[in-house]
Image: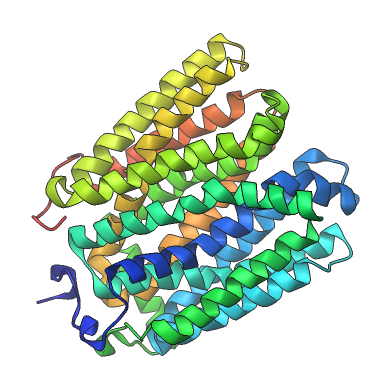
Length: 417
């Protein structure tokens, strides 16, 4: 029986955390990344003003520099985790995240802040790559999609509360305290992983850390049609998320003038995605990843296309209630796409889970961040650039999915997927 045929691997005999602790731990690890982005959204204007940045659009670089480091480093953590196991590289990455957060709190200039944020992102990359690899070590098929959906559900709580945490910190002190908070979160995760997570990599999947072996692992991933095109499709879908995150302060604060209600509006979108992910975890075992994600992607594309037409009819300044309703409808469907696409990309590659998670993570962070920055930097005082970006990326993701499936959508390949 191959790894892909198993719902849970033999490594489970080494007593990893129970299902719910595993979900909580992996979600907490992945949430460090969301926390490092979303907690500072309310404070971007103050950070920029404190460090002498006059151009409002340049505030986005505080997010972009972190995400670029986060994305690039994932190419390294995959081969490292395939050679040295999951636990040691994960703890090393958490330590870098912790140190980076501390230094962000004391930098004297905006340029230094961007450099240290990039460094912090280098450490955070371990949480993304190795969390997915750990889940793939232990689960396969629809069971992996169920676990990933639960992780995404818990993970989505962070974007819900992070801006509120950031706003509260800003009320209590100044922006430097935000980074001390991030350092504390990193330290808690270091202790949790150290004491509760055993090594999950299968002994037979250990691969040498040589240029030839690394190239072979990456070739295995890139030459697999399903994995390759689902990775690209996921990159464009996640580009919508990064486009939203980079544009959110300007859209909600400048266009709609929500003020202190911004965290609440942001939270509503996170709640919608979390609920959608919970529903996905409950029904994916019955309906399968392909039926759910393909149907949701078609719906997401249709919704964003209609949203764009409405936006253009209002000249890019539609009423807030209508804008928000369309946002919630689109993002509910998003919750059925992301976790299933992640699982579909990883499904054929259990024997090179580290390398596969590296490339998937790189594409869906560094690649998605660059795509998202295109949306963010296109802001022109209206909502049109953001909605246009959502629709264009959805169309491209749908086209790549059609290629991955050779034109046959919503058809399970076997009872497990």
